[in-house]
Each structure stands twice: as C-alpha cells, then as structure tokens.
Image (cartoon, rainbow, N blue to C red; front, side, top):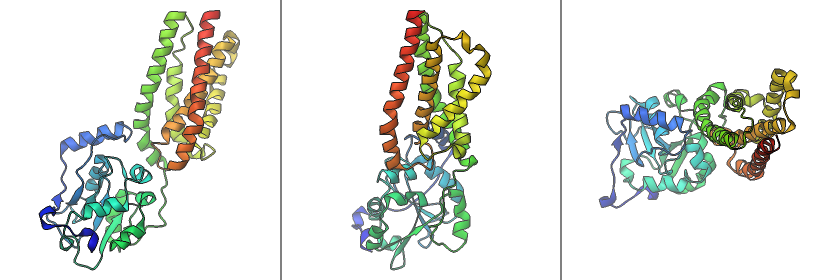
Length: 331
C-alpha cells in the first residue's frame, strides 16, 4: 500500500487515546462557544483499548477537541483505532465543507506509519464519518489502496454499527430533530446575547445623549428570537435561513400587536418604524448566524445567502438607527 509507507526514521507509533477532567471543561467551553475553533487534538493514530490491535476497526475523524472527546466517550473500552487528521481544529462537517477534511489529508496522516503496522490485508479499510463526504474524493483513497467505508452520521450509533457487520451508511440522513436543535440552543443563545447586549448599550447611549425613548423591551423580545427560531425551525417555511427569520418576524409582530395593540396610538411613527426595522433586521441576522450552528445548511448556498442578506440586515439596522435619532431630535 504505497500511500502508507514511510522511512523507518520518520515512522510514528500509535498512542492510547485518553482524556481527563480538564477535557470535560474544554468540551463545555467549546459547546458554549458555538463550536468555534477552541481546542484541538494532535493529529495521528490512536487506539482506545488496552493495547493497539492491528485488526481493530480504524475510524477517521477531525482534530476538533470536542468531536474527538465525544467519540472517545462513545468508544472507550472498545478496541478501536482512531486516525485524527489535521483539520485546523475545525469539526467534521465544517472542515469537509471547506475542503480540509480531505482524502489527501487522510493519506498524509497514514503515510507517517508503516504499512505493516496498519493492516495485515492487501487494502487498508477505514471508516469515514458520513458528514465528511462533501470534502472527500473516495476515488483518490481507492487509488492509494485504501478501502473507504461510510460510517453512520451519529457517534452514538457507532457501538451498534461496529457490533454488526460493517456496511456503508449511504442511506443515512441527518434528522436535525428537536434534540439536535436543543443541543445548539444554549451556545447560539449565549453568542447571540453578546450582539444584542452591544446594540442595547448603543441605544442606551443615544438615549442619554439625545433624550430619545429607550425601550428596554427590545432586550427580551430580541432574546426570544433564538428560542423561537430554533424550536420552530422545521415548520418555518423555506429552506432559506433568512426567509425563515422573516416569517418569524411576522409571527413576532402579530404577538406584539396583540399585546400593545390598544396602546399603538400612544407611540410616534418613528418609534413604530424603529421597532419594525430593528426586529426584522434582528430576525434576518439570527437566521444568517444560525447557518453556522445548524446541521442542515449547505456551505455554497450559505455563502450566497450571506452575500444577499447581510447588506439587507445592515441597511435595516441603519434605517432603525436613523428612526430613533430622528425621534430624539424632532420630539
């Protein structure tokens, strides 16, 4: 197997994969950081059992710490090998979309080890995560005498998958059910709160300078957006994340109209316009933001959506800011 041969002086050895208490803390931080790049694991070949077994299944994963840690939790106690490739500390799905989880990177990592230390057969079988396929050319692996097998989408399905006959999971689909979405809720909420806090602080400063109306209600209303958006995600029409935000905006405005309907005559046109522009912009902005946390977004479509709707969001916020300034100047 030419791809995996290397000079003896450069040959590396597999290491036992072990985690401790500090790794729980790192995983928690990664989770609350919305899966952004935080901690990584050194690329290389690892094993989870008491000793390295050449005939044990070989799984491939990224070097994002949280992914490797969760994989280890599912597989610890089993005799399994894990090839951690260098994805620059980014998770499987995102790194494959960016071309970092690739066949060439897998071959590069395997080349660090002697063929006799990897397989006793003519071909080396590796199990790939289903969500990595967008970045991997399977033909490139086969040319390198590597036999790729498509594993399941969910790590928790690996024990049953390994216990049964290993087959390609071509028909597996990512469900993105309520449990999956709730897993993204807390980190999305925490990160989104940062942006809303900044906007609220800016509006408060304008209130102090121009004596404008300061509506503290924008804080709870804005923070309800992540909760509503993520919970209602499947029933919000359109596959476009920004359009889903627009639909949620209409729903939100209807609720606010029911609550404040009898008092609308008390508010100036500037105030009403500010709230409409601000909430529309915020719903679209969260839709764009959630493309990075959702498990069903498409990388190329997301790029187009951001190019289209990010300027729209900016203009909506600018118009909202002008409304609040005019309200203060002309009152």
